Structures are given as structure tokens and as C-alpha cells.
Figure: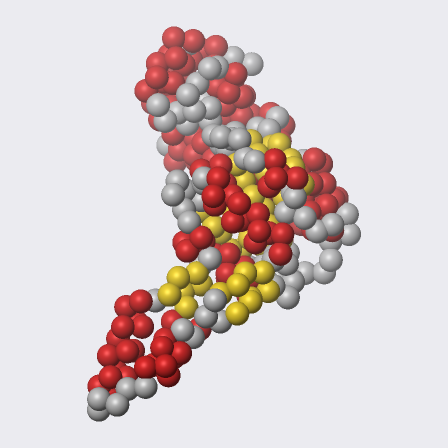
Length: 294
């Protein structure tokens, strides 16, 4: 791990070197999460850089990143640990074959529940690999029961495995939770976190991101893409484009050898930035010329 972070400005500089251009609000929230220490709960529209922030923090601090991707139906076993039943069965059969019919049942059972057969999932790996950055991505996709389980783990930074005993983190991981707000996360979880709402970047910062991530792009083309994406976000789209779509659009234009964005090029490359036919139709009705104006 690199030396301790001195201030939000110091953290912002480190994140910039890792390719993430953080505004003062993001840098301050992340700095306080490290210093206090508390989990950082990042909420916002898809594509505002929530997941990328956790990745950049791990890179800038030279800490391993452990990611738990939440989804509907995720349970404690998928997040914490499971026993490798196929290997346990093979081991038991090998013991039976070697014992010549004189297998000690208690000893055999005890040998089945060791770390050799333990499949550590992200939460357990984060507790045993600390210091690290633990990214709990899209917590809003999980259900209430999983939230309650997660709350206990974050409170104690420890879990109990009945067959092995308690596992406690020597150094609590730096936890970043993200949510696209497809549902409201319970107040009990939010109260234990520092909260930050991430907005889409303003035009100047989006242009800076494009130029940083795509060194071959001109300032003119980056400005045109950034301006067009900003106007797309002002429309009532099913899926407003995020920074990732801005980068895809700019990269597509570079691949085509374009040095400027005009209506014809925009029409043929709109699929890199819009992912729904209804959105493309809405943009078509609004007019591509108005999209590129300014």
C-alpha cells in the first residue's frame, strides 16, 4: 500500500494518476471513508463512475480489489463461503479405500471441514486479505435478507464459520457500495455508511475524461462528443448515456478516422451511445442537428 493519504486533494491527484478524474465532492467523500473509517455508499444513475471509483482507489493505493457483484437472489453462501462438496466426496472415498474397512467416522468428518475444502467467496476473501478495497456492486439488486446479513458483516468485520470458528479482519477493508437506485436501500445500512450521490460530469470534466482516456482524440472532437452526450442526457431517454458510452462513441469515431462529429456520422454511430430503439427514435424526432448544435 502507498503512503497514507494526506487530504482530499492528495487523493484526487492519486486518482487522476490512476485515470479517474474526481471532483472535490467525490474526493472528499472517499478521503473521509478512509480516514474515519466508514463504508462509502455511492448512489447515482448508471454510468456516473461509481464502480470505476472503487477500481481507481484500489489502483491508486496499490491495494487488491475484491468485487462482490450483487444480483437478485444472491445469498450468504454466494457472498461468504461454501464447502467444496465434490472434493469432500472424493476425499471421503479415498479415506474409505485406504482404511480397508476400518474408517474412523469422527476423524473422517473432521478432516472434511478444513480450509483445504473451503471455497472463499468475496466477503470472506476481503476479511482475510485485508488491507484491501471491497466493492459491493449494485447492492440495490439484492433483497432485504441479504442486506441484513451484509449489515452484520460490515458492523463486525468478522464472520463465524461453525466448523472453523471466527474469522476477523486484522485491518477492516475499505468498503465501497454502489447503487443505481432501482429500489431504496434500507436506512439501517445507509446510516453505517458515508453517502455520496454521483452526478454525470459537467461538460468540461467529461471532455477532460475523454482526452485522458483517449490520448489520440482532439479537443474539438472531445468537445463535440461531450456536448452531444450532455444534450442526450437532457432528453427523456430510457437509458441516458454514461461516461462509458461517451468513451465508446469517441473511440468509434477515432476508429473511423473522423476528426469531427457531424449529423451523418452521428446517425451511423448512434448505436455506440444509445442502447434502445425507443431512445434512437426519440433522438431522431428531436433532430440530430439540434443535438450537435453548440
